[in-house]
Image (cartoon, rainbow, N blue to C red; front, side, top):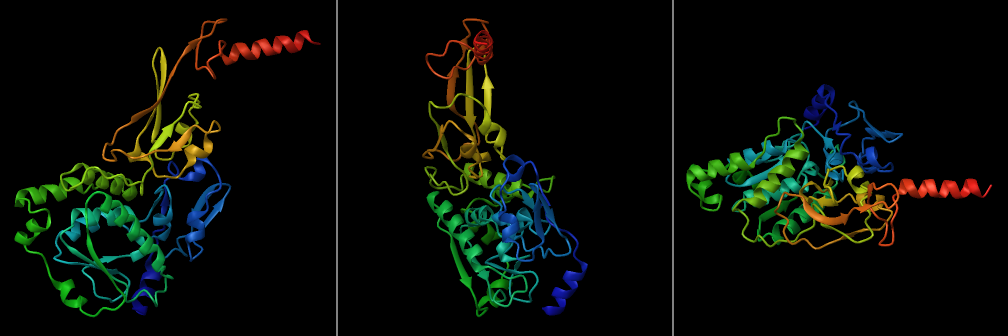
Length: 361
């Protein structure tokens, strides 16, 4: 194990990559979650920019799991490949690829299992028993954090249980009895039984159509797409789930004046504004939301409040606020009124205020 780790450390050169379009610091400075989560001190922040040191990074994947907006990509964490390989196993025994521990599904680090990936596994392979082999984690050179994996598991469990899915899994700190389980391969007949007892052709079609292999290599984007496909499929028994584990349902009150700040700061592009000849409409799409809360922080009108999720399965924009345009009684321009008594656009108000100041001289 030590020799394998040394060889790996000397030959690796593939640090994480950052999608700046999704990084919180691109929109509002002050997020240090990835930097603080890295035990190897391989991540640094300067003037809102995130830097990765490939020589220090051990590719454990903790930073990408902790990133609130899924802005970090790591080469070692290939979520869709994990889901595809899992289809071939009778039982899933997940273990570390840098150790000689028992496992038929190896990952760079068990901490690298994103909650949304675990949720996909629980839903897609509900009929399988999943074992997490932590036997080598106590002496891990990476500085394994068991609480992170348990937190990811709890999030995934809360989410899938609200959908009527009851997964079967075990956490093992000892390898006893795992050897035989890890060597079992699933027969074609049993594979069909595992996936909701569908026909053989339907099973293959289900797995290949739901698991989204993203050509951009942005595994965080594609794992969200995979999860959404699962929610729309007939694999979900209870379509009345209301879990807000992975996204938020926002309600917009009358304080909203259509300024668009929520749109401009959202890393997931979950907000959008559409204007017609008579109205300005604000929409929100939960499927694009990461619960980062930037929109609420940016709204100085205090117009956003957490709402109840009635249907988390619709990957579409829902109308949250509609504002009628006023016609300025001075210049006849269309504008969004600040209140019911507002009769002038901002430009005419400023001109009027300037005239008053000049005349007062």
